[in-house]
Image (cartoon, rainbow, N blue to C red; front, top):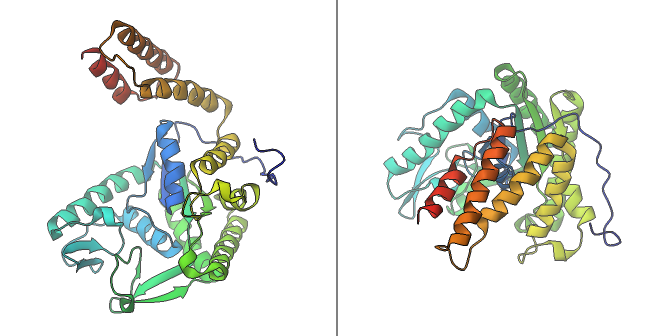
Length: 333
């Protein structure tokens, strides 16, 4: 795509094939959400970050264990804190926070129940590590997923070792495969740099994560594999034109480039054909006409509706009820 301006990454073919019959659990950093959004737009069955964005391996492991056990958070949960007039969970993203303890718990437990129900059918876990640095609450003694802007003195900061991550995930993966024997774990490392750590410390952190994943893939080659999103960003797309304005996050163009690699490696031909047909329909639905009440636009919508039905006949598991409802709503205006 950018021949002459990049150093191409050679990515080996994967025996893992992702289809629409493959329920996917997505956990980890905000880069995981970028891939997760693409998968959801492509009508894959996904459960994405039930705790919100999590960056470090220990918090991700804790979240997966809590989902497996179907934990219910109560008012006495050690993760629950009040700060700045809001109630937060130290294991959850700020989107779960609320002005009352009851609402915060409803937000947490609602998503936990959904994730617990989804987990047994999971065939693929996409886990993205963001950093090897963790923050431990000094008083509670727990590694947190989110500090929620509590005073810095509340936490101690440490960098996990490769051995600590490998030990934690060797045990975790055994627990997961006991419940989901057919599950495959696909690891990635987020290409987003954590500049607050400093550039050198960020490199040490990413290296720790890469070494840990490599070891896990060596120990459990039938269960674990790695997708080189980090290397694609750092080497293929090393130019700053592939970064967002903050110079840390990948730009939409970079995310699209990484997604194309992902699709090329993991999607079989029928899945690719479906995605091409669905993307054309999705773009057509996104079209905003000058005269939405006109007969020409209603004919256009009827054609889209027909294309959706034909696609559903070809792919029976395809769920497009929301899009069909949108077509009917616009037709009836």
